[in-house]
Image (cartoon, rainbow, N blue to C red):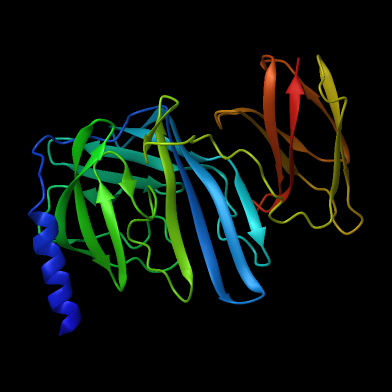
Length: 307
């Protein structure tokens, strides 16, 4: 009973604050969400993953325009296997500005699920698709308070919601406290998600201070004691990539190369321990590479410079 009264009091207090009737849509390009995922149930079983979602480029799905979302890298710190094994293209986001709704189509699917509905008010329920992004079951979000928050010199609508026993807030044009896609994720036994920052066109929008650079370092998620060398580095024309692992039989590894914005710029299939990376199509600058098996298991990663 005390919990209900507390939530009601908070609802009234928050809703009494300033409101805004102007809807602020999500960006349609050049946006970055930096996030962190924690799991710390019983030590030494723990994991902390830091990664970026990057919005860049468009695609057409079922005759509708979507904005593509990528997770180019994951920096992992912990003793457990990462939840985010799959990197690269994650899915595509679409928004209906008039309806104040945002939809998402995960990689490998063709049908969209509801991600946000900013038209809701106190007491409404946002019915979330249970298979959009969360590793476990998503639950519906019940709106119990509506507020306004100052973001990038303007007030935006902020919806406070309960998903299971988890409290979260959703901000127009930004996402949720948990992240861009994790609004309905239900944390279990020490599991939680957190949005670190959001930037658009290289400018940090939320929170409004500090830097918000793309997280672009991979702490090999599943290296299997693999030794990978690339030389020369930096290189001008070509470089040799050498892979050594006595326990792992090299067979049809996929090499993908990304630029600093997380865009896939080159890829090839590797069938032996040595291969050549050619700079054709690559301008001067910093690049990141990943080696994966045909079931997407990450074998190794690194970076190089073309000059």
